[in-house]
Length: 135
Ligand SMILES: O=c1ccn([C@H]2C[C@H](O)[C@@H](CO)O2)c(=O)[nH]1
Ligand SMILES: [Zn+2]
Image 1 (cartoon, rainbow, N blue to C red):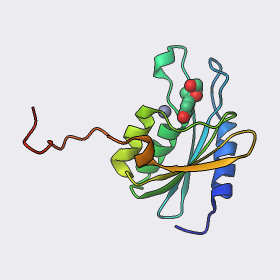
Image 2: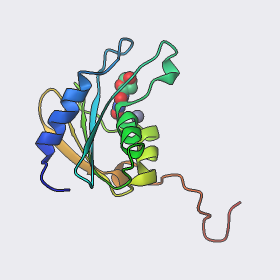
Image 3: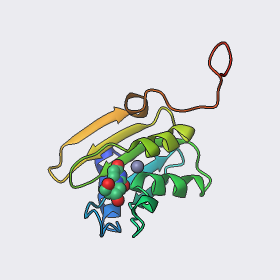
Image 4: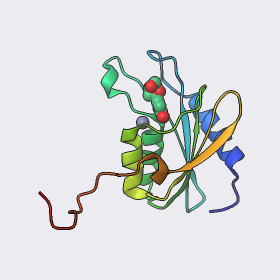
């Protein structure tokens, strides 16, 4: 679980960005998701001529991890030319498995920033009824 630092994980994310298929936006994104097993799952954005079918790097990494049997996720590193946090759709998908996930990001300029998933998505959707019952 430990043994890999943020900078190393970000390097994996940067490598993953090289696989990005982003002919429409020209914005390559790479993700690297560290699981509690110590394994790292990379992902890149994959765009489509039907723009709305594009999948973000974060969800590619998440689905690789979960479909490999990993459900305990420790850290997500995100690399893009201009640093970005995961979009709302990706945050919701990540919250399903790792509401306490730590996320570190970096861009071409090299500066590094970290936030928790809970800071970025303060009210994830869940099927749990609110007190007093569901409407
Ligand atoms: O956090 C992000 C933000 C954007 N993108 C992708 C989607 C699209 O391919 C391109 C521009 O939005 O970047 C990601 O993969 N992750
Ligand atoms: Zn996204």
